[in-house]
Amino acid sequence: AMAGLDYSNVVEPDYNKDKLKQSRDITEYTKKISELVYNKWKNKENLWKENFKGIDQVERTRQIYYDTDGIMENQTQNFKICNKCSGVNTIKSRNDRGDRIFAITIPRDACSNCIDEGYRLYRNTSSSFTNVYLQDRVNDEYFSK
Image (cartoon, rainbow, N blue to C red; front, top):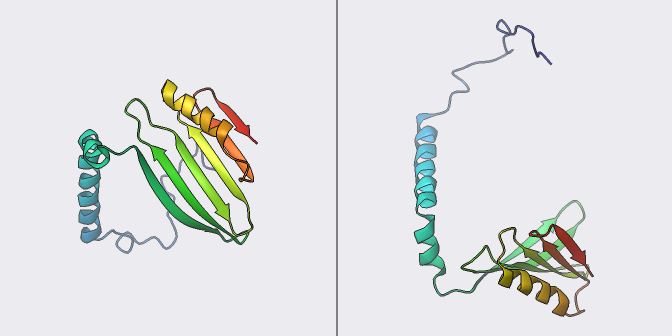
């Protein structure tokens, strides 16, 4: 709103610099967390090897409540561990209204094996689901049945 205008003399009403000053404890805590996260990031390859060695998939379950629509969703997400790419990601979801979906995501950096697996999963998934979705991020394609 003030683009190109001189605002050097503008004063915020009720602005008190001392009142809004962050405490030293918060600043130190933020520095410690930042260092911890940065060190983990620098060591990500070794952490990956330690945490996922010998594992072919990681599963995460969660329950989500959509308060605007009053829907409760139970979701199981599987991440394939692939040494060549990010791996195929699948989600099985059901809600309290009876809908069941199966979603497959082929990541942008997918290897040929994971691309093939994503399409195989899409073709072979049973009709017990309300909908089945495939997002192929390599070829920028989306399918549903």
